[in-house]
Length: 326
Image (tube, rainbow, N blue to C red):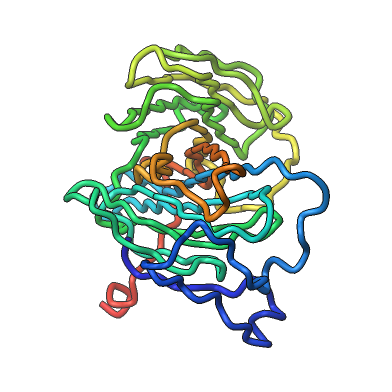
């Protein structure tokens, strides 16, 4: 799974430097409880426990698309596994995690004793076993990031907007889903703020979903819902503004005229672009069979700052130092 780092459970633990639990000898009987109380499990569970462990995989994608030959698009994919354990005693748990070969680095919680490769590893997917003694409260078991070279844009976009008359613009938005992304969203929408006067009319012909006013009449929202009609959708529109431009919040003075950027917001349940998921068949704990621990899992893939710039206007971009020197 790439580079592995360990973070302290809290500030006091980091300053005082508590010793980490020792990894048990493989020849020892793993049905025995871990007797030592770890620093991150100082508060024992009160009352009757349900002997359950829930692991949620939350993965995020951040992207900037320009549609310009001289400016490469940017895309980052990162995620984390959050765990909530409600168990008796101080059990050692074993969790199998499968991911794509493009995972670059992994940072683990201090409760993780070891990460071991599993025989299920192949050229496409990697499977690892995590051994850990979970805290009593919800915590981040580990965090990861995908290699930039392994990422494909989950949703490719194209955006053009041009002023055709003083108070009228014509725009075109096109979106295409990558083959690996299911056409099944919890939600999907495109938000376009327009730093002009108030919108008085919109003539839009979306191939899927519906276009509506937003931002107090100073923007547009294209709502695509939970399922697109096809894996490629488009929305051409003509927008007319009021002749008397009303004062609006000019917090970002760069976004005026044809300088515009839209924000794509979506969430896909039971999916991750990195193929990161929990292998439930590999789960186990050191509790006796009479106190069997039940495992539940969930996955979700969400956009954050997923933007597309108008290719007919100016856009913000980052320059590498070597390019600035040239």
